[in-house]
Length: 286
Ligand code: PDD
Image 1 (cartoon, protein in one colour):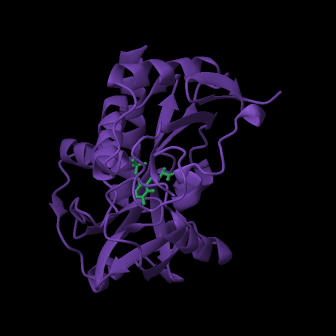
Image 2 (image 1 turned 180 degrees about the vertical axis):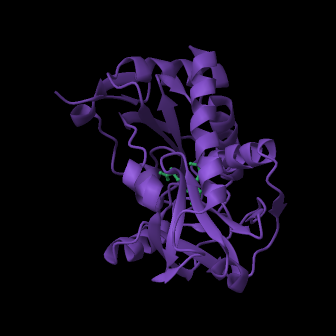
Image 3 (image 1 turned 180 degrees about the horizontal axis):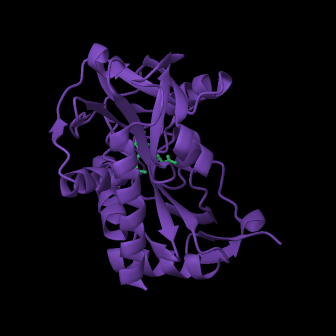
């Protein structure tokens, strides 16, 4: 049996979901998306994900086809139609179907698609032993804060990591750390947690915010500022964070050990805090 997805007002089996070939999402990558983790059937940080969706829609000048309450109701409905307690909700809004023309159509109905997959968080082995990463020049566009479905740059970069068995590719633009192909990046130097500030060069990760909140609660000093490549490469610890990876320690970068080459002590504190925080939030929502 095919799983149930949502498309333009209806729930239907995935194998029956169809969009016209002139959809601007297909033709131009003209759309935005969100990935929302669901723990114990509760969407994690839903208001924050919906606020980011609104900012992405504003940035591409596309009216939000639904209110926040309508999004929340549909997301809960989709979750209820799937068996797993932990899910990953993917939603996408495109500018809809129109004759091919780069300029926006005068009238088009946005296409709204949503699906749920089992949430696969990192295996214990990866949490305990960390992951290898490579680095590359960040050659993506200058609106990386928009969660756009135009992900060709990210896909090419991510594949360069996959080609060599690396988990992620850590990106540097003009000699400064930005993020990774599908995650944010943190480093630890002399006990301080460093990450680039939110601007047009990185996606404002929901997990990034959670990590900063937890670090503050654990009294870990935080500095959000430009991080020169040399400083990132000589860091004591490096982490990647995202809704699906949560927090993972990077133990090698381009084959060279990061710090001790093992997940560091600050990572262990933060990872434990993250797991505890998840449990607490879910207990409160239950
Ligand atoms: N990616 N930076 C980029 C480029 C990303 O694609 C993502 C998430 C993040 C982390 O954001 P968050 O913490 O909100 O997941 C940072 C998602 C998971 C994806 O594209 O599948």
